[in-house]
Image 1 (cartoon, rainbow over the protein chains, first blue to last red):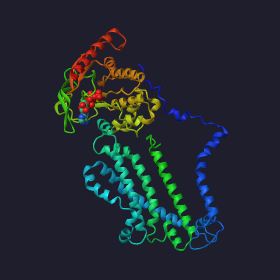
Image 2: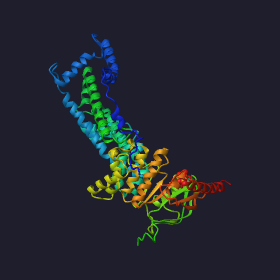
Image 3: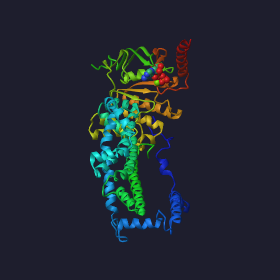
Image 4: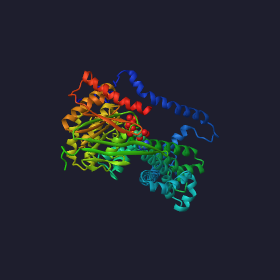
Length: 286
Length: 260
Ligand SMILES: Nc1ncnc2c1ncn2[C@@H]1O[C@H](COP(=O)(O)OP(=O)(O)OP(=O)(O)O)[C@@H](O)[C@H]1O
Ligand SMILES: [Mg+2]
């Protein structure tokens, strides 16, 4: 009797078998994609430089000026004005609002999404209202947020939370509703029934969709933060961008934009890495 | 109570099932009667749509009957339970659990102590020969391996009856034959009861103690046939072929009658 593993199954080993070529070509290969990715930004920088450098009345400062400003913003010691060496303060303020708002959104949207997806009564109760509220842009909430929460960081956190809320909610609902019914049958015949299925089937099965929601939500949080910090707060990347605009310090405006871009990129990358760790099992995610 | 000599492990008494489909009534199963003794290997065979899956799903407790009863050890079936384990054609494995996790899902759901679950898992991984793949996820396995996991999963959970709905239908011929051998081996060693749906006459004769022939429109049990060939059975032998011809005629006569 042959109780042995399939040998005609090309699995697992496939990845391990990939030979690590030790030729110089492999070395070039490794840096080819990043090199391609750099072509476009370098080209933009070059064009930017030649269209702005040395022109007295250019409204846009050349890249070198932005770079110097960025350094001064981060470490000080060049211009020694009100902005010098303040970058970390503003960055931390924005980060705390982005992640604070995001955490609030997650804490509400995730359980709500799970319930709307699974409990018909909750769905009937809340879904129509949420569908009507969803198309209202976050910016349209700005005046109301300022009336309710006043001028200050609480409005910003509220707007960020609102921006992150819907992507997390919608994707969670979608994930929960698209769990293969077969898995509920499998769980119940194996002795996992009722509320236990919530944690042992619904949650893990919808994790890929939930993660997609988290990434989108965090992306929106970064988009909204600038709007949120225009509501009269003193610190934050959005706040210095607004302030610098009023002072016509365009190089600070651009520096702030660059920092937001990099911070948003890193935070998305972290979520992506976390997702790939948690979702190793999912062929679509890994 | 549970005298294996007296009481059938499974007793279908006049089981009927209708589905409403867009204000149409579909009679998936009409007055099905079937008794299965402990340790029997039963194959269900019949044309597409004759209610084989429906019958299995009723026994599993996934569908209520419209009339009649399914009795397990004399007690009416009231929904899914670990004593009746289903092996789906599309596996139904939990993609986020490894082979170990899938096999241990039942025992740990039922609150078995962790050490016991570990032992059980290792025992059944050995039984189906998946030691090397114990920590692989389902998407990293071949179809045959997935089906081994699905079988181990219900066995590890103390299933008394294993319900198999065309479990090897999606596999290539070689893998299929090997799994048939392995299934018979496990069945002989464990004293399981198996209810096995197949489209293949050959598979039915190769595996079964008894082949139950069903026919569609409305789905019903038409006849049954005891297979008394000694195991291991030789699909090329004259005896085997004689049975194959007889069963094939039975199947086609029902089919012809339906078409007329
Ligand atoms: N959930 C359902 N809703 C409506 N009709 C159904 C449902 N499940 C099965 N049926 C109908 O019941 C009949 C029997 O279906 P069943 O799946 O049991 O057939 P089967 O013998 O397993 O066929 P196959 O060999 O193709 O798998 C079919 O006509 C089918 O359309
Ligand atoms: Mg079927």
